[in-house]
Length: 356
Image (cartoon, rainbow, N blue to C red; front, side, top):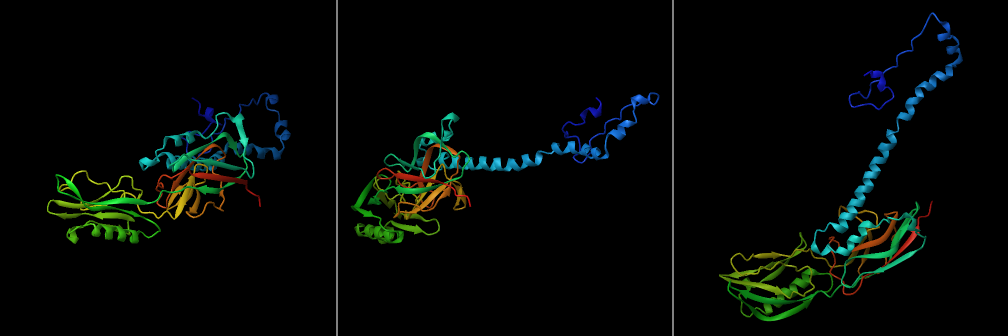
């Protein structure tokens, strides 16, 4: 194959990047026939036209534009992946709420049904009772049509259950267990976990009925892990521990109690969930831009003190079209709040960005 046939084609992997393209062979001339090589040809072509011969190579350099677009495409895809993982790749079983999967197809398959997102429009939605992870359906696909919008959480209401539990001081010896004293009920109120733990330990001692103090179980709060520990008492084959009513709403006392009382019973039980006073709600949505939350990218819409019901902060709209919006309500540890007593209500306000 004549190597000159490759002139004008794309450079292959075997061609060095700095190699000049092969030159074409000059046309054969006939000195015997002057008409075959008219002398007027050089004079017809003005000297100024010899420069454009180098210009054909200019259009062959579109790669810088493609290289500039590629990173932005990758970034957008990564953002969308992070948002999908945040809502659908669950670290805990309670976030695997199947109705939330419908937001996986937010983009309308029929472009003709797109509706313009209007400046100043509001969207209201509500969850079902006892939901902390839910989706609202707008029943149409709204599109920005290339305009820049912002969104704000104009109203929010989610009532948490009262945080209380019934405690039992129990004794087991491998064969059976018995309740010591009377069950007692305590409610957590305020923000001070140490004060609450002190009340629980005092009540345990009150109901110990002659059990040696060093064998009485007690609760301890670990400042480093922000988790509550249950220190179990052991005397020979006797194990002194606690039992919590399974209907309790003290979510930070989620111990995995062993089913048997034997030598393998651990000396310390650690709660699975870090303590949160629920002083703030972290509201995430599938249309929010990614923000850094505790060092991780999350689609954060707003952070609200539990005593407030609206945010004054607008955030850029993170999508250009949507038909459903998924919400996720967590504490500062990115753990879902306990299921709400009633429905959760949200109202979003959209506005077009003002050009400065």
